Amino acid sequence: MLLIVAAFQAAMTLPDVELRAQVRAKSVLVEQRGTSRLSVRAEPDGGSVVRVQAPPAQRTLNNVTVTVDAAARVAPDAANTAAQ
Image (cartoon, rainbow, N blue to C red):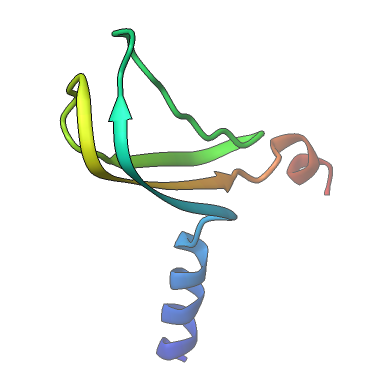
């Protein structure tokens, strides 16, 4: 019984949508300074996370690897839950 409860709790923490991207480039030249942003959103949002691993910003980068991990969880719809 305890094993079933542990498996159920582990399944509850898994995201509904997961995305992992890894980009490699031999050379990158940044022509303009600014900010970049990446977001993940679910409706209704049950918790979304984005992690980006990238080298520090410089004008020229060589042999660059950028890794993006994104996860989204869809919250139970309060309107549908109340109606049931």
